[in-house]
Each structure stands twice: as structure tokens, then as C-alpha cells.
Length: 266
Image 1 (tube, rainbow, N blue to C red):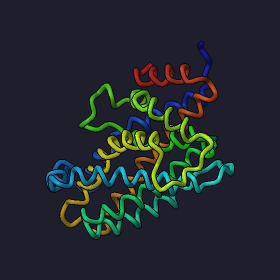
Image 2: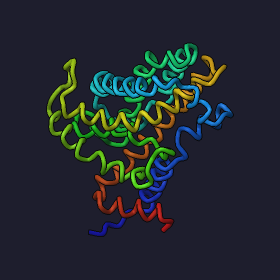
Image 3: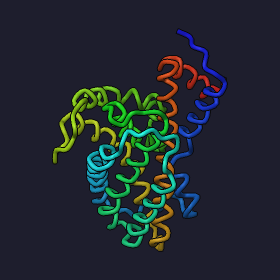
């Protein structure tokens, strides 16, 4: 079914496409610190690779518990990006002061702040936070990290990632619908989704850790890196929830077709 999308909404979709296909976190960090991210990656001890994965999964689990479910469904035209960014900068400064070791304490806090910011952006795009589908879409944003060198080309596109996560999201949404997640242990369906998302979010976390491992980054550098970190995922959230808003208005198939045409330069 072909639906005519208004020029204003086509421009909104173009803006979303630009956000979702940005150069990625590694490029932003490299420009900030003036050092290729690969040099920072070489400084991470081998035994930290698995540890970063564990920290990332724990951070997402804590963020789901603490962030989305405490926000109200009050109408909002604007999201509080600045407040969340400043909060993330402060925690990044603390993490930068302690270097790589500070990641264990800092990342769960930063991720919770980012989750609240993502949920706030979702609300500003007309989402209802009490809906389980919206909550899972907020978690989905952490898998939309932009292009990464470790991505296979067929897996890095926005709709390709959504398709990859669709089954896990569907199961988690069905399980959590109408429930308040206040348990100490996340339900199995949600745990599976967190695990899948953590695999992709871990790529961005490793790049952040690599930057913090560069000598002389310090507290100021850590704050700046965290500012880039949250700004990156705020962009992902704005793009994602703009697309979802348009899908509600025009249908998923029409919006996906228009999105692909933008990507092909049509």
C-alpha cells in the first residue's frame, strides 16, 4: 500500500536517516583525543575484553531496572538532553580520573542516565512509556551504535539491526506487557534481549574504554568522552523514535521504503 508522506515528514525522515548513519562513536572520539582509537584498543589488557562484556550487560540490566520505570507518562514536546548530558559528563570525569578501572563503577551509572535520556526522547516523540513495546524500543537504541569496523555490512543497517532484534523484542514485550519489573532478577525473555543488545553496545563501550585507557586522558578527558558517548546515543534515540513516530502515522512498510530510497539517493 503506497501512502503519500508529506514533505515535512520526509524531511524528518531524512534527518533521522542522517542521525542513524553517522560516522560512529570511534570517529568522534578519535577527533576529540587526536589519537586513532586503535592505539587505545592496544592498551586494553587481554583479560579486560570479557570483563567489559560483563560490565556492559550488568549496566544495561541496572539501567532497565532503574531508569525507564521511574519516568512518568506526562506529555512532553522537548527532551531534557542538556541535563542528562551534564550528568553523564560528571560521571565520565570520575571514571576518567580512575582510568580503565573506573569503568566498573562509572558505566552502570552512565548507562542509566543514558536510558533515562533515551526514554525522555521517546516521550517527546509521542511514545507512551508505560507500554512494554516502548520500553523495549528504548533498550533497542543501545544496539543502534552506528557503523563500526567490526560490523558486517549486512548487519549494520538500521532496519537490518531492527530485524535482527525483532524476535527477542517480541518475546520480551509479550512477557513484560502489563507487568512491573521490580524483581531482582530480570525475566528470561528480557535477559535474552539484554544479552543480544549488550553484544552490540559492548562495541561502543570498548571504544569508550580504549579512549579512557590512553595515557593522560584524566578527569577532563573522561568527562568529554562521556559527553560524546551520551550525545551519540541521544542521536540514535532521536532518529529511532522519529522513524517509529512516522511508522505509526504512515505504516511501517511505507516508511521503510522511503527510508531505503533516501539511502539510495532517491
